[in-house]
Picture 1 (cartoon, one colour):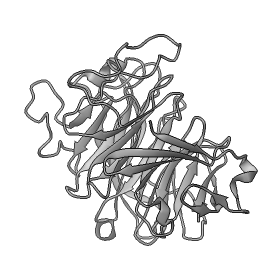
Picture 2 (cartoon, one colour; picture 1 turned 135 degrees about the horizontal axis):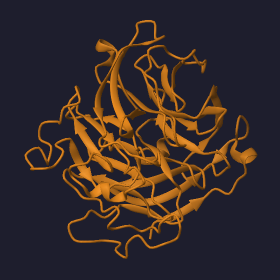
Picture 3 (cartoon, helix red, strand yellow; picture 1 turned 180 degrees about the vertical axis):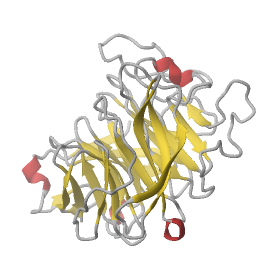
Picture 4 (cartoon, helix red, strand yellow; picture 1 turned 90 degrees about the horizontal axis):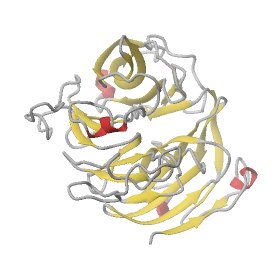
Length: 370
């Protein structure tokens, strides 16, 4: 069984702008880096050290190296907020951003048949005040009716192949969409930079299947990151009542939802009696009760040498920061950091080797661990 070390502390005992916090493998301070953000959701560092941040209500801003927050950028397309999960979600600069100034972002939008997740790309203006030429490149179709939840929507670029990887939620209303290969919901997609299906995808020549699909059977994946030591793609997804998961994503893999799950439905009813099944990938790690993992990040910096080789998860339920110790593509331990009453939406490693955390609040902040 994976061991768990829980730091029992209140908000004031964090070392928040004050005394240090001592964890299993590091001593750190928690400081406020930036304030004045409404439900920040996605963030990515630009090559010059500035931080590009999305706010779920539909704004994008730049935070400078001193934590000053810009006015909202112009040129951001309209976003449909709808339910409590929709809005302007993740953002990622292209690997060649320094030359192209190209960024990718995803948001929810309305079409005649309902709401859907849309992936778009644009250029950040030379003065970093606006997006230029914002263009949709993929709609996660078909659109969903009724509930506007479970949009997924993390974006990463493959460090070896340069492809775009996008996670999508199952839409909540009909979880069986995650098992359908003619439907982009409940999937991890692999795309060329222009939104076309990437060369080498497992379902490119599969009749009736969407060729963008890389893996399927996911519920609401809001964490996506490449392991810098093994090159594998890791995903974290929210379960229902129990059954949060961390997975290593394999091309063509079926991750089970909703045919296989460790959780109950939100009303307490049984979704499936199966916890594992032939032909389906088992998770590396499961949480029951849930932690509701959102953004994830591997730590390979030098500021916290004891944390090097760890995976960090921002948690929304039993909120806080979770650290998993790893051996290659295996989870060997768990440590829960910063338990508090604040929902944490995303965690990223800065160019300075520190960790930055987005809080999911109306008066949202970016916290910095130093």
